[in-house]
Structure formats: C-alpha cells, structure tokens
Length: 233
Image 1: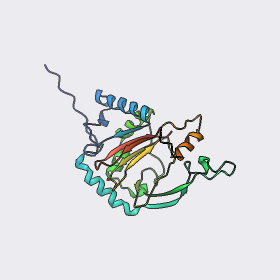
Image 2: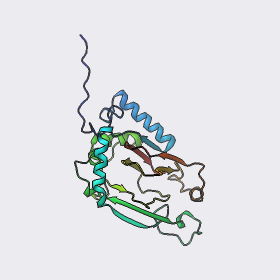
Image 3: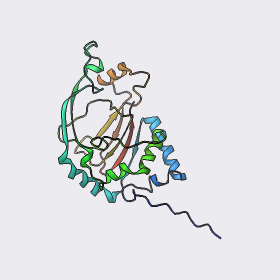
Image 4: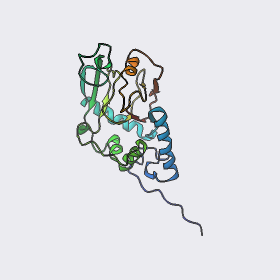
C-alpha cells in the first residue's frame, strides 16, 4: 500500500510570502533546511541576505497600496549625524569618524499606525517568520520589539531624503523593499568593517574618505518586493 503524501500545514503567510520559494512554514523539511543553509552562507560571505521576490506578484499591488496609504503619517527627522549617531568628540581630530557629520533626513511611519491587517504587520508578527530570521542569524529565538512606536516602521524617503554612512544600533535589521525608486536605488555597505573587539576607526575613516575597495552594492530597482537581512558589523 502506498504511503500517503504528507500535507503541508496551513500557514498564515500563504499569499503574503512565496512559500514555494521560501518555505518558512516547513523549516524542518529538506527544502526548509536548505533555505536556512543558503541564507547563512550568503550572510557569512556578504554580511547580507537578499530574498528576491519574497512577496508573490499577486500581493505586490496590495503591499504598495498599504505603504502609500500609510506614508502621509510619516514623521520626518532632519539633521546632521556621524556614523555612530553620537555627539562629536572634541578630544579627537576633525577627520576622525566621530567628528564627521553629514545631512540625514528620514521619514518613518510609527508602529502604532501600522494595523494588524497589513501585509508587513502579518509577516512581522508571524511565528514562522520569526523562527526563520532567528535560524538565519544564529539565535535560538527572537522576540518582537516591545516599543509600540519602533517595533515595526515604514520608512518613507521623499525627494531629497538621504541616509549618509552610518551604523544602526541593532545587531541585525530586516528590511522589506516595497517600491521602485525613480532613480538610483543602490544599497551600499561594507561588511565586517568593525567587530566587538575593534571599532576600526581607521577603516571607517577610509570609507568616509571615498575608499570603495571593500564596498558591496545591492541593486534595489525591481518593482517586486525583496527582503533584506543585514547584520550590523
């Protein structure tokens, strides 16, 4: 007698994530384990994982409509920042990275404005998605951020907004790209530039001075949504 095929259990992500390409609901399966292995390998080599077409084409228009609906609620911060989002250090020379400031304008929709029925909130809160991210970054488990304003945000970049070179304060960041930029659209970073043992200020200074020898660049010009897992380092 033939053994009946095992049915995949239903997933709350069905329709919002391409589960054929990214079986987040079956991470213990051969395909799920291969996905995690591939992501870990890419993270180890590049310091970043790109999940192309993470959201299926059928959900792209809804995803874009949701972010457009939320974008008028964005709060914009304008100012100057150094790579560490810190104050200047008068005891250090002007060329030191801590004393190198550039314009930064960032608009974001706070988490309490992103309702439970949006695609991004459903993905963010899903236990399978959280388990997947934890597995990729080498943690037993991760938990949602307790701050209701900053747990999940929608970044809105209007004309003239820019992000200069900077380090975020998180150990890792997960970003979902939802709209095609009018022009440009490159995410540039230098993996492994610093470590818990060394801030490598000399290396950071070289990047600020224009050294692109270790720079990596990701094109984000496609309309279909991609996910990016970026480890801070």
